[in-house]
Image (cartoon, one colour):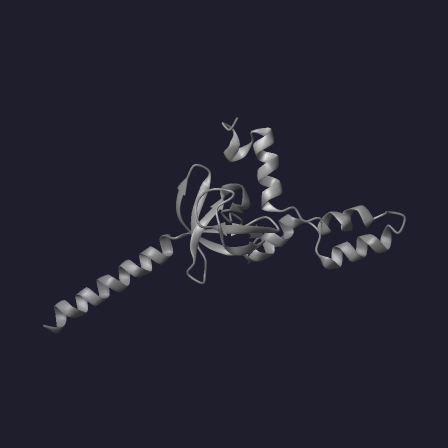
Length: 161
């Protein structure tokens, strides 16, 4: 009796391990986005996501990717906001290999970090950063975006008259 039960437990553990290993991981590549309830730009948000967040890919449909967060929340993210981490770094010494975390790659993709920005500002005191700083303060509501898209017949509103 013990052998069949042990075999079932072993096979179950093996299947779980294979499922985990086979899971596709994607990373948020933009500064901020929303995990949405449905695969639509104006679907209700489930949770806010930020650059570097790792998500498990569940499925895909029409430019949207269904994902699961580390907290177990499932929802949709537009494919333009995420990427599959594909990187392999090799040091100058060919014998020594190194790796970058998905978070480090996402931060590098964003360009400036706080230290780089402060250093650049210090070296370029003649530059006026007020306009750039002001852009980060601009907030546009979903209603304003929807109105813009409807008027321009863009995105989900391409066929709307």
